[in-house]
Image (cartoon, rainbow, N blue to C red; front, side):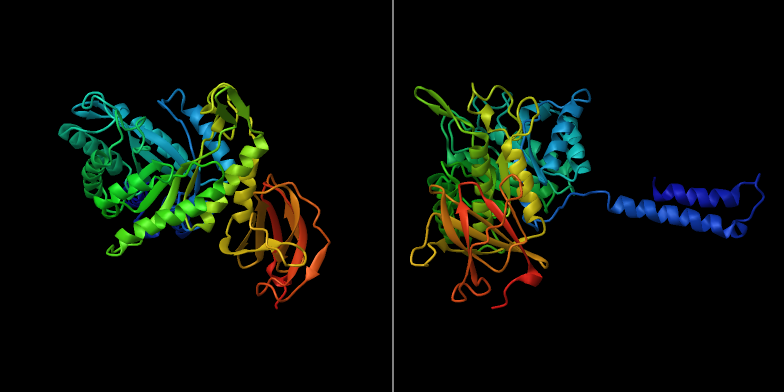
Length: 473
């Protein structure tokens, strides 16, 4: 209900000749009641959005999301997509990555229809989900191939992007410019950084006019493609965007530590004169269950897929990347017949997989936490450091959480800890017995004067400590 309506209610009571009551003689309690109701409605209107609009996302969990395939939403099928959003919310994720394809919206040279997109945007907002919106793919009315090559195509693509931004202003949408333009599949017939940058600059110019505060990420390369990224940087990429985005696909997540260093080193050579900070994000990354081979396919276990997904998120956190989008929420066909379909963390029949529970556990464990440090692990006598063991430290005002795993074979490792643990959970949230074998050694990392003997596997383990109980040395 709007403010004007409430004022009309008050004034009409004073004007209604039939009531013969002057405004100043209205029952005081009645006026107070109306004002209380009015205030509560206004406050509710001011805070009715659960979606954060901060850039970059302010907390670890605020920056975590998942990619979906919500195609052709209508009033008849929106419930199907909303139920998927409910599962995404249950995982504790805060961002949903959706497509808005140019050809879906630009119905004719004079007509744009963004209503289906707004249905998704509104449904996401009601669930506290922020949208990362992918603006992409060529329109056959203007372009012959899956790319933007012509002057008319660039102009019309820019108009489409600006319209989407204008109609979504103030909703915290993050805009992703095209999908993997460094591949011939998504920028055909041949990937071309020059063509991509021409289209990008034209579109971003129009988008900034529509909303100077909109958040834009690019170029969303498949993998950390240094060659393609360098070509984009040479043409002023950083002046156009708010974050350099990649799709960090790899065999194992830990490979990206060195790739991210290469990426940041490359970008640093172009960012010195910027008047704004430049961030790095992963706007798509996942691991399929089905691994294609020349003689068929090899199926990973659900737990293996889950471990890789969780470790990819943790690697990005350590690398200082404030946003990570998992690919994807739902298997859309039989995963044993399609590697692409097997990326889902939920089965086609809508049954949560191991990755679903692993993501839920991670968001619960790291809610309100900040990443602080990495520690070492190794042999009991400290003569040998196990370089394949990872120990991450997170904390808030009340507790410290250590997350640890290994990329080598399962083994016992001496992990540095700050005190006596109060809880230990596996990757999927199952409580585990806290080991009692500990060694005191105050020559270690300050504040972490103990070692605990833990069996490490490729599946991350969460160990919690109360801040009030940790060692002070």
